[in-house]
Length: 356
Image (cartoon, rainbow, N blue to C red; front, side, top):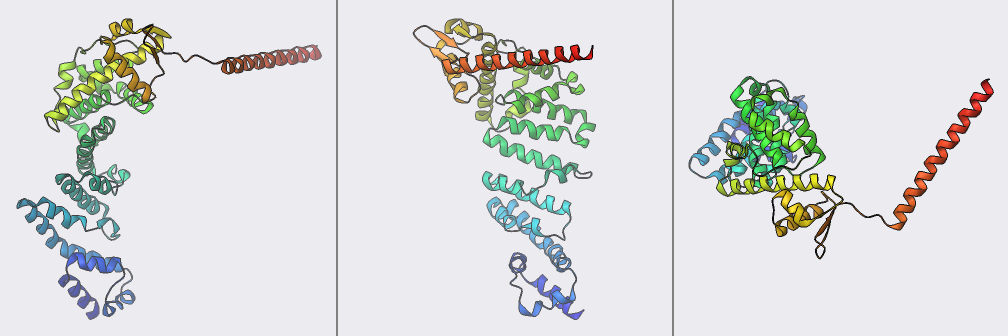
């Protein structure tokens, strides 16, 4: 018992970070080694040391942060790998990692913020009693994805906040989260995952209370050319989520909004036309020839649509012309299908004759 007390006193005297590094790398001084034989779980002892020194560690980075030394405060927390301490509760670990994320984002260290954010298990955030941490985590992740200008990840962040039980109880909170989700979905590049998410949100009964978002969502899900600007364009662009990140980012989002509408219209046209004159397509979409060519080229490069532009003839082809080999392969496949049907029919006729 005296040995354990002495060890604990020794742990309290040692600098917190130094002691934890000693333990993590198995460089415990020789006179502490008998503790392995005295304690059934050394994590219990480390937990006592951690909680005792936590009161010393927290004021240190708080004072540094209050003094304006955010970099120093962040470095204090970054050196503590709290996720490796098995004796701490899940909630304590999440709280500590969230502080690490907040400070790393505060010093604009986005790469480290992403690494720290991956330490948090998303399933743990979905557990009961973790609602406040879930909101804090996805709010910080939204700040990170806003820096990357990743609209689809932002939509998923706000959608996760929207599906939090505490947010669902407050109408003002879930409205803001759902509006932000729909806004960034409209700003997201076309993909099957994005389309799936649009259809799932379109089936949400709460969408009826957000008229501008509902109308915009229906326009995007309809295979028709959309006139720009949209009927609720001004209301969508005045949402708080657009303003976050500064004026420069807000202008980028507005330009992206226009680009997504143009790309939607080009996809719709490619579904109805095999080939069309460039002047006519530009007239339908409301663009000049150069801008239309630029957008089609970008979509072709990204693999979103197949198109070829014949400048001398001013024709845009959306259907890929088949070569002789492809036509012959299709013909052979059709003949093979026909012969199988004939063989099946003959078999059924023979079977019917035998039963009579």
